[in-house]
Image 1: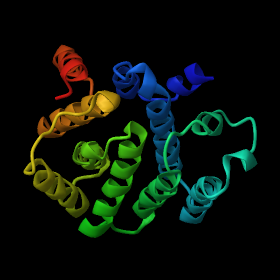
Image 2 (image 1 turned 180 degrees about the vertical axis):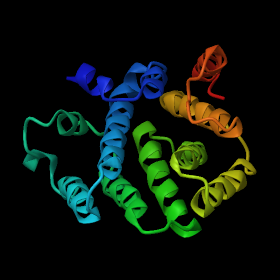
Image 3 (image 1 turned 60 degrees about the vertical axis):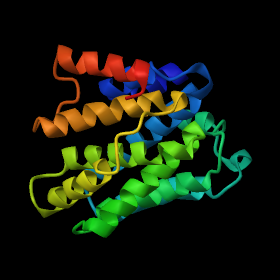
Length: 212
């Protein structure tokens, strides 16, 4: 089952996941797979109301005891093992939902980044990694926004966050450190590909080992 979920992840995330210690691999994979599912909902063309209904389904699940979850959904089965508070998963859904607004501003972008950061911190049981997660979330969002005011706001918030430092990541969330480093590199280079050659692979290797 886990192998099937890993296959749903983008290649950079699969590479980053390989640096997770055994004790953290399940929650990190679960969070990566959930974010991939939520982002796919937003990428699908169609009415916003349909996307909201799909997001609401996940939010409803996280508001229920896991014993009431339907069987047969591989991601839900993995999320039964979520080690922390599932309220952060409901908050994560809310964070992705703000992207359905007609226009993002600095406040909603910060809400999005904060929701993702809270979920990552819970996955790694390390509140100290919140800044790392915020930097990753803002870089990831900026890479997926078209040039314009929204991307400018995302990059401005990222610049403010980077001004607070570039902390190393805890061992549990070493995959997050890899994704942050690759995202910042791509953004700084004006690129949209996280893994664009040997230099990116070497960066992932270094950060995967050292955490920064």
